[in-house]
Length: 138
Image 1: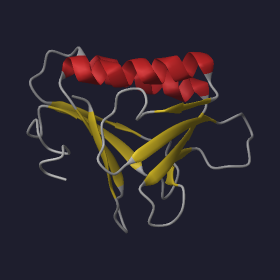
Image 2: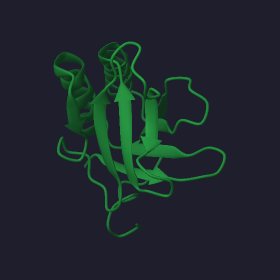
Image 3: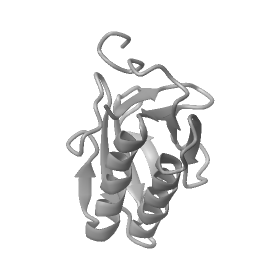
């Protein structure tokens, strides 16, 4: 199962995305779909399970007024908006697919837009137990 959870922090907030290779490909495919279509896309609707976190991808047009990157909708919220240009989504899709297809038993990739204060996305395979971020743990 593809699992995700927002880990708020004053210094290093992170959206943790966990799964086995086939699950991470679901995430890579969602990012690729977004890179083709743009607009908006709910990661929850694309197969990312979470007990408390909602993430909406929104296309960020060149020169748009909002900051790119992943941000809480409101302070303290577990709802996040991930504003990305379509080409960033394509790059992130490839990073996740490369991790999923690496054949390594464990590893991770960090997806970020290099904006001060943004929430980083940590995609991990084999570094957490399979039930982490599921109903039993969260």
